[in-house]
Length: 86
View 1 (tube, rainbow, N blue to C red):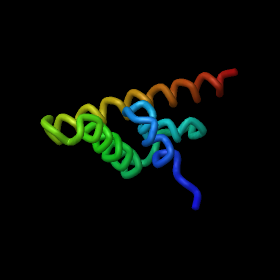
View 2: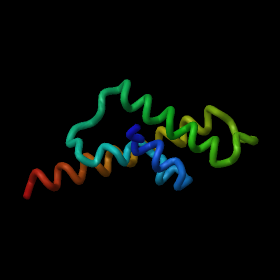
View 3: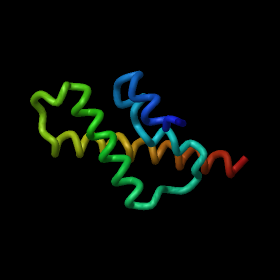
């Protein structure tokens, strides 16, 4: 059975390895809103998991995940735009 990048990277720990945005490096356009929401959901889960689901607030996890995913998507868009201008 083939494992997804998220499943494989989950073992590495931390949001850096777990973030699904890293799987969009090949994509030159922004993802559909439902895909972005799914990415944020997964990232928020890993943020909570990182602190063993103790303390914290789900809403704060969501906002932190949104910021992380949006940052990564912006980096991806900038890199794609730069490649297209070469």
